Length: 509
Image (cartoon, rainbow, N blue to C red; front, side, top):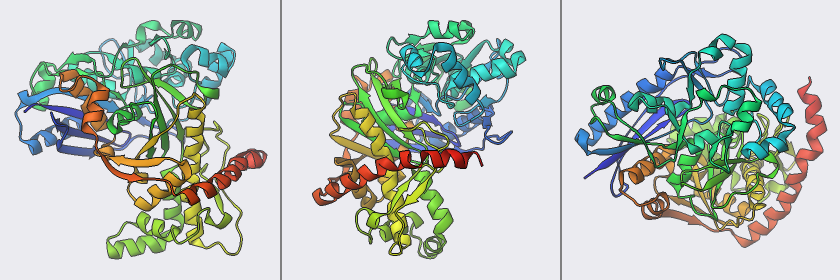
């Protein structure tokens, strides 16, 4: 039997899985690592740490699977998006990578919008506005603040693409990570020469771009020797983590949304036709299916809000969890279910670290609204769970303005685990919520599917997703709850605007 490797180079860990021709995971390994915080709000990483973790996890996965090197037919890559890795002419890393969650480049993003004539004009160039996470601001920051390093840049790559270079010696990225630079013409599927020239960025530093299941290079003899694999093993383009997860959950068909409730929350839908990004609040990227797109919205503190509540107010539940072996989150969810739909009029906005979608507003603040004497901790928990889903519904409502009817939501991450929380999601979103096989594997399973398509296991990305991903649970909306949530959601939508001036003043304190 033949196998493929799926590698996910995450923010704080690398995960490698081995998948056979039937889509079954036969082995996996994970290695965690730290990133660097040189100043408040700055996050950097040494790319060699990612490579060391990749080597370690590949070796461990191969040992667990007990298969021969020549049985690995292809390798797929996924990883944190937007992270900038600058390389010199000898392909040495010039400085630490500037990560996706680094916030130093607000000034540079504002300058981009000013130079092009506003956010709407930038959407004309690249279908997106310049968010601080994107690569565009990081390149311009180095150009302005570290000109000596900028002069040394011969090429830049994104996180997973550095691993591609270490595996193959090739400098390339895929269409999704190219889209995430905010320098790529997402409609025409090429680097935006007009924007690059306007910003006076060296065109020579841009990597070649390949489709996600396209073979981008082959394993070098040196890499093969280090990893215990066969020289010449093909490596496909892969995809950034969000787009790889869309492949890995089967959200590759129009009408099927992917909902990830991790620290942040992602709501993503596939598009077979290009459509204008409404207001720039969403991200519109090329995706894992060649010739198609994914549009998604990110709420910054989805599961992060639940974790904040657990850590701040859930000491009792943590103690019970330690004694019983049950998960503290599940204990809190069970408590929340003792409260009526709508938390007896208590609402929560999960903007505890600012917000990105549908409001690109770093001054947005979390809020509990409607508190009265009848509300106990159980009501607050329920309000948090509902507020998280309301925020993701905001993103899905924006996506629906493009004329995409949603028929099903495929949920992964922490929000997929508890069936009672899945019921809240189905009731608020008003559509069926399902979990599918392997949805907990993150980008690594999507990377493996892309590698399998490249190796000829499956004829296309969509066909692979249809064949491999089986629905494991289905949760349908309860009509009475759905009706009540629609009224609560209308009130929720008013809170941001009602508090905006107050929050702007708070941010100045």
